[in-house]
Image (cartoon, rainbow, N blue to C red; front, side):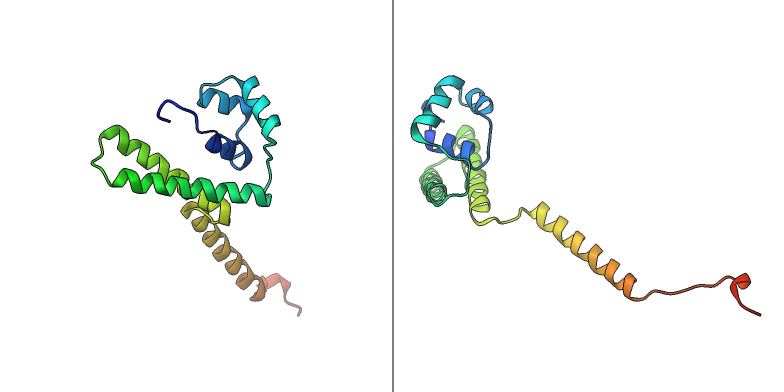
Length: 137
């Protein structure tokens, strides 16, 4: 994070990704009690409120600008890794914001849909088989 903490992004992880304060404190190397104080002081919410959505859009736009800036210069390995992480974060924010499924989720949905259709087809074409002993004579 280039030596300073991006509390807007930490807030996103708390509110939207729903990471625990312990996870965030460890990840960003800060004290959990200080983080909790900040959460209470600034009124961070874990919901899909309109304010939360506006913050998501701001964060996403900020990430996109950072990505564009990074692409305007030659990249070293560390910058490449940071850029990749920023792109993944931007994609995750957009997915959360617009409730878009990942490729894996889309694949699972497709398989489930196909199984459901197959089950419906099997239910509609019920066949009855009789053994020889079942016939009335």
